[in-house]
Image (cartoon, rainbow over all chains, first blue to last red; front, top):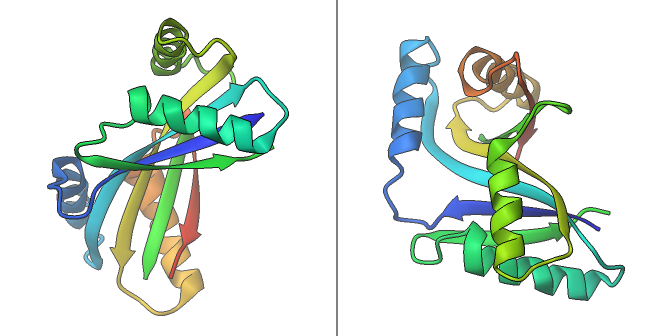
Length: 80
Length: 80
């Protein structure tokens, strides 16, 4: 099944990448931009047909490898 | 308005990050994983109340800065 894992920094964690993008956008002439946050998307095929089992498997992958649980949150979506 | 820009590599473009994650997951004991693709999410506040205008603004930001149009596709979602 196709799964999408979305990983974002936790609220309150400084996002230097977001700050850099914010500054670059202002410089490029996009004044009305604020609160830029950057995250990751990992899409993968997970073997299995049971949605709950695939979701659980993906959550284990996310907490073991895909997300740094100290500073990041993740969410799992089974696409198809 | 809160906007989410999702940037993924185009189909057919080699994804070394995805390959590395695929390999790491196999090593960690997740055999049933394949076709791992990695992308970016950029969430930002864009000044404005008109959904169409905000979407257009975000699309310009994406094509000018947030996505490398040679190898990446992007999609824009106005969240709230």
